[in-house]
Image 1 (cartoon, rainbow over the protein chains, first blue to last red):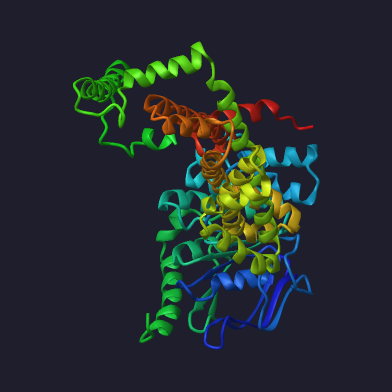
Image 2: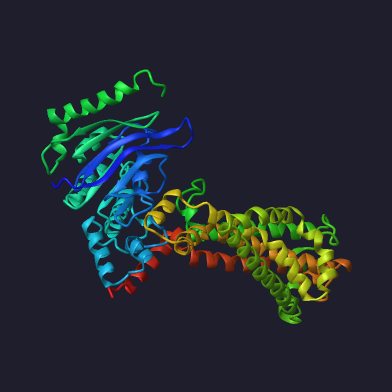
Length: 257
Length: 284
């Protein structure tokens, strides 16, 4: 893995009011091609940090840059995915996947072929013309993933993308996600409050603690790849879970809930 | 909203065979109408207050099939209501879109729309007649006035309350305002806009008929009033039933449009449209 830095934050802060500090003094460098999990309890500022990187909200202090350029707004090389699939109900799956192209004004044969292939890649063969309401929650997220791939973005910011799905579906989608983003060009940041999921997916886990939102630890995950579900029961994996828990509980002890 | 009942919300109603259900409906109808007829025939109900269904039916038959006098009035009132609907809805939609796009416009103009709405529209009928005269135009104007608000407020609400994540998605994709408006705001708002249009349709009919009550020479409203002044109660009731028919036909039209336009709200329609889009798909 090349050590080229794609995302860099220095003293990055976001305060909504003087007392509500969602992100405080975040400092990190994310190398190209890596998979970062951002884990922490609800309200610790994970989503805010993600939106700062995406250029959807403005920072109050510090620096955030992508490819050595200060983030001032949404960028073409950054794609987003949310806990909800956010599909347009009046569009079929493939029309939803083509939305990024429509917005850029290039719905040609190439884009259409790519959308078609994207849906096959996420396992939605034969559902190209289904409407979102005809799809299960897991399938809707697959469409959202295909739409994200369609943007051609090589930085993927995922905000608890499978958080609303059942455990089994989530596990399967995580494995498939790893297969899809296993590309030295694609950098991924994955927000979750599930410690197991965070470790399973990542090269590095950023542990965030709330009030004020801080990155309390960065833990390297040196488990072999490709990852398999069986790894989750190994002693190494459990040691990592304990490490994350210790960071969180060290901070949370005595804190108001 | 046939999907609601088929999804089992109305679990109390057991699914019976079609014949049984038709029989039940017919039975209920006969009991009500028969009871009414009987009460009238036996002298329990004064015919000047409630004429028996048979004489109302006879009058309707005469209006539709013997003299054919009703058609002209029917179309006059329908024309007034539909014109009023189109005008009122156009104004309501335009103001709502302007308010949704421009916060400044919204801040300074929306309060007038609200004041306008809380003032009973019917109460301005005398002014409308003074301004627009005794002909069709005053009926159209009142119909437009009465039906302007529901589409206005529904459209405004629909355009402003857009899913936050969808907004972020559009921003992250670099959508401009025009794309945001046409690809997200309008389709998201369509269901609530349609609900506003349905209310407006009923409002327009009320507006047209009330304006006719005040002063008119043609239309179902004035027809009913003439009958009532002459204590011709079966004629009055027949006119009332004609109004119900008008309301019903307008309502059916709106339901039809609703099913056509909001296809993604009904499973059977989704399957249909899905097949059509599949047939239309080509890579080139």
